[in-house]
Amino acid sequence: MIRAAILTVLLIAWGLFLTLPSTAGCFGQVESYRSVVLWGIPVAALVLSLVFFPRLSPPAGESLGGPARRRLWLLAACGVAFLLDQSFLAFGYLTDWATFTSGAQAAAGGPAARTVLWALPLCVVLGIWGWERALRGAVYTGWRRILPVPAALSISVLAGLALALPPILPVGEIRDLPFAAATLTAVLCREVSFALVFSRGGGLLVAGLYRGALWYAEAFVVNDWYSLYFPSHNYVAGDPLFYAARAVAALLGLALIVAAVRPGRREAAEAAG
Image 1 (cartoon, rainbow, N blue to C red):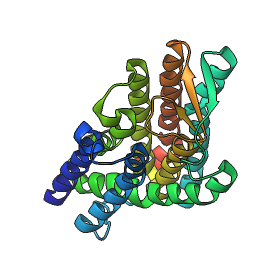
Image 2 (image 1 turned 180 degrees about the vertical axis):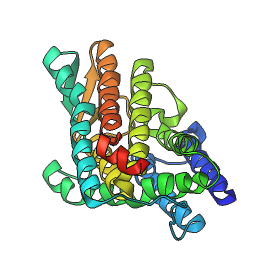
Image 3 (image 1 turned 45 degrees about the vertical axis):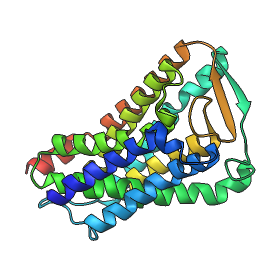
């Protein structure tokens, strides 16, 4: 429990540290700060989790993943949830509530067709072994030894929220209140989704794949103009309702995950027996 507590504090502190204006001022250019936030967060999470939990072992009576059929089911659910989470983009385009522009592809590593060859695999690998290994494999499983599932998951979600702050509040400032509110709502929904997928049979693999896909989409494909990330394309909201649509889309994605992780009658009967 002590190791889990120390790791939790360090992860939260790392996220808050990268959000401070004084931290951003240490970098000569915004590109350098952006790169540290993009890659430094999951790499630091990986290193810290390896230091405190070199070997991942689940609490008694639990496992770090379910059977193959369960994982495939959850992976399919994550695919649909991904589409729901990102559906606000189509809504903004069709309603003209958002304007889409080309970003700096050079900042994202080159043309999209070339970037996907290295960026997507890297996001997936770090999503599994960086983000999820630390937040769920270490923080959740560490706290789970003394706390019930909801409490342990809540602590891992809180740590994930802290690590997600730098791209939303770069240099500690709220660039736009509706953007910050909608993005924080989306991040909260996603962190809960990752935690549920991990704890209900998906394990590090499925939860990390889902996280990696969302992370890649926002860091390299398309994101809000106010975000710290500057991918191949950006969008600028022309109506505050666009951000309401974003929050609703994130909630729909979470609702689908909640429905997917609920055990069916047969599974519930087997668990009860």
